[in-house]
Image (cartoon, rainbow, N blue to C red; front, side):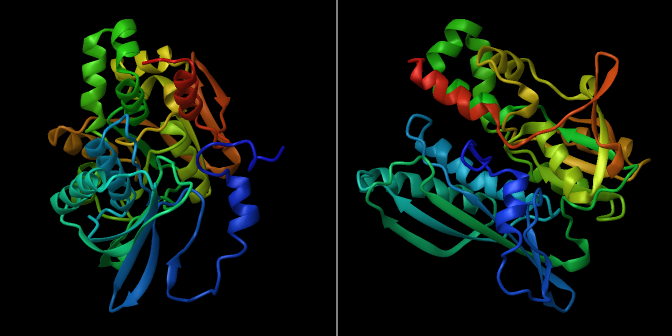
Length: 354
């Protein structure tokens, strides 16, 4: 069985390189940053020193999570990718392939929340496509594409890290995945872990924005010289995101496991669902690579904005590989794209957890 056939979530690095990357249509000189594994945003030179940054992501419509919560995920996960540029998104288009069973009342409520969260972030909805599709019953009813314009030379990407750069992680591991698991199986989580853990997880759901993290970092450090790269933590968690950044940048790294920021609620929920919090969907955390000597300045500035941040390691040469220091020993690590969150969710669902 191939990696493509035996995988939930994003495709693996090898599938991307073998199937997608060799066939990306017409090569145009205006494309300064095109399709690449581990890179959140594409960049097009539109002239006069300006760049157009573009990113796409799936939408969420998860009934047992809630319409407002689904809309939050739909908008915010798109915003998070765009935040890695160091700028805020300005425009968005949505494609909605809806279930025939979805009522107009439900759709209207969902769309009201989409509108509200976009308006809140200063994002104009400029168009898209909406329709009902026979057989559609997925909780991923389509996708969105966000855009922004900014000075071309100031746009940051996840492939700009260099050996010697310090690696910073904001907030905590597994914020998003453990929050969704708790909200999807509230009775089980409260019965086994207590109401306080459950309440914290629910609060964490709305900590999944990294726009403030990114904008705060870009206002204190010079883009692409001090603040070298940023990468949103999604599937594969904090460690998976660091691996993706290193691959995109052609670097290796050494990370100290004890330095990874771990919250009590995400840790306990991950243990309950028997998943490794370091490799689980972690929207809300941002990975940043900064010039050595700038890390304390950045961490201090972020924490002054009430954004927790920690220095967790250092980028190295590609031949050094990906290394994790754990229990006093340094060992190589890898991530092949199979985030444990997906199996945990469906296993709990099949087990009848409430």
